Image 1 (cartoon, rainbow, N blue to C red):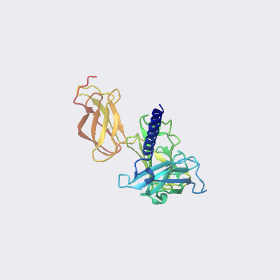
Image 2: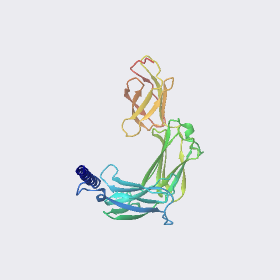
Image 3: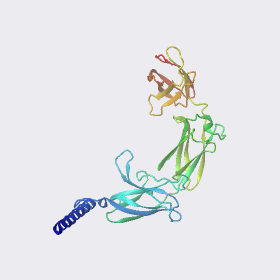
Image 4: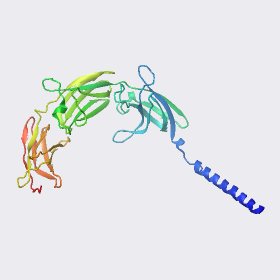
Length: 335
């Protein structure tokens, strides 16, 4: 009986030792294996205000980027979000890279920073080394803002959304050598643009501001030499007037003369790489597409549960003219 107990005890000890060794093997990995510590280094730091030198009181994204031969010209290798005092801490792949900061607050006084490909002034070169903690103090960049106010041809302030369909939108683009900023105002989601649209977080400098209306490339207005100053809002006026815009209108019917309601009419630019323009027929089969740049267009018609009709003829659109284009389909509707 004593011998049996001794054997059980010995076997239990052996099993424990085997499990322990196996557990250590599983936790530590095979000998000479590469751990993440061999690929990453630790970084800590603050985003600080350029005037006070003190940490900012808002959240930023800190992006570590490398120059790459791709569509964008760079690649984000790590993104770390700061706390509300601008402090960040994390791990970044070893090697050389650049650091830029991006404010997350919608009405931040700071601005987005470009990649070093556009302007190296705002990007910090960083070298991440194995076994070391890299401490970084990044100065944020104070930006400015644009308030775009819409006016008619007589200079009277208007709300363009009152003249656009709820499915339409207003596109604004501010561009300078450092930065391109675009904003889309969806008319069905925003109550009004009567007091203007503000484009925030812009680099100080000269901008060209362009607008399109309707969300389909309707020509708008263009302002060059717009000055954006640090820490302030610049007001500009954009002319909004669809009355003189070029348009194509007409009726869509099937081969038996039946009107086609809810048919989608698309005008495809023939020679230029610009947006496709679309319109929907009403209950009388009538459509109107407004805001067309001059040029030649192919016509597509889409009707639910019917083929897509590509018309052979080309529509020529001339500036400030309304083109009549009635469309007869070689197809009979069973509606």
